[in-house]
Length: 214
Image (tube, rainbow, N blue to C red; front, side, top):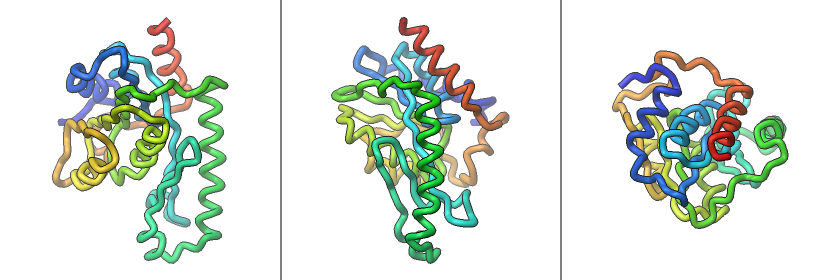
């Protein structure tokens, strides 16, 4: 299955999540691209939409290689085996962490504009991204939601690496994934249009959901 773009992926994903619609369901998207997918799900099942800001920690000199992730509420997940194998020092890690923390705080302020996160205690949370490669940011997000006492966490994505999906089943209550190709290389290969999502698009998705709810 190839998705035209994130909106198309979100509409297809929503068809598999309609059974979870209800007054106690909240949709949470991971920025940036996951918020676009989540916005389609939110509209289809008529559930409120929120954002949960996470940032991958990239290896020094290899920023695409994730060695961990940070998220709201000071949650951090580290791949200590990989950090040790690469010989990354505490000072190196602190430098990466500082830069990503600054970007996380910038995005959180831009997207939330002073508003608190939607309450999730006791609720069903549909945690949505545009795909799963290593899954490190999704893992950090799930731990934030656990700490916020979500009643049930359903991680939902259009496409993901099979090993990653298996690993994340230990972090959430359920994983919904439309495609788990055996020869997974990258999320973007399953989209015709995978151009980078902007801050402005994220804000528009959140504002549209707020208008629907009002």
